Amino acid sequence: MRVDPASMFRLDGRVAIVTGASSGLGASFARGLAAAGARVVLAARRAERLEALAREIERASGGALAIACDVSREADVDRLVAAAADRFGRIDVLVSNAGATHIGPAEDEDPARFREILEVDLTGVFLCAQRVGRVMLAAGRGSIVNVASVLGLVGSGQIKQAGYCAAKGGVVNLTRELAAQWARRGVRVNAIAPGFFASEMTADMFADARSQQWIRSRDPMGRPGHEGELLGPLLFLASDASSYVTGQTLAVDGGWTSV
Image (cartoon, rainbow, N blue to C red; front, top):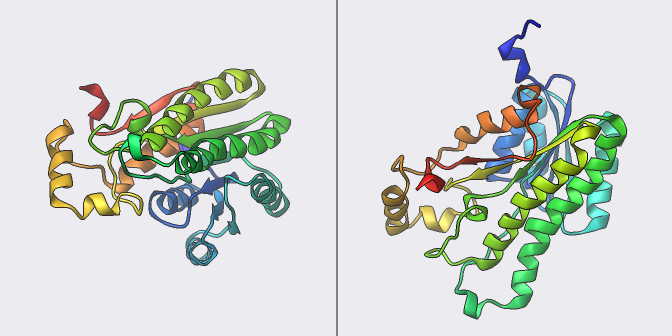
């Protein structure tokens, strides 16, 4: 069988939902998927930012829909999925990127705040995968890409965030389990585990010279990641280029988890 390498990464005619799309990595993911040919459904809590991004994508490539959504709320997720299916008639890709964190020693962390982080970072990933998964399973096709973290693969320690690490570790194994359950039904489930990238969530860290030096001294490549360096892995997992890949977590971390 003859294979066209370039076309394998294209998403023409497909529909992708991106959560956490109002800023940072989520907005970058949405732009990248649209540039690869997908129509994108943008989901996050900040409606004004979503609408601005939707207009930008519409001007550049067309096919964008903004839906205000809190992924920890079942009714919001149901409304998101219904709106995507109603507007575009199908859902082919889900990128679960919405997230939150709390920095502080575990011995002082408020259990209520810990549960809050789990609700967004883990339960929200499950709710989106479950609701979108039902649509994909009925169609017999689909690709889910969960955004985990290197801190779901190794501990953080110096940047104390027990809830975030627990949630992202859960995302890694949830990805494996969903992949195992749905592999024979046409739905693939994988994850990306980014290392340290500049985003709204990491703004304080990147504004601090000591933190930046800590990253440079610990990372084998000696630097944090650049925003665009996640797009290649994302398109690989979202597209037919990874048609025989499921249940995997791809660390995009400059070698952080290799040492």
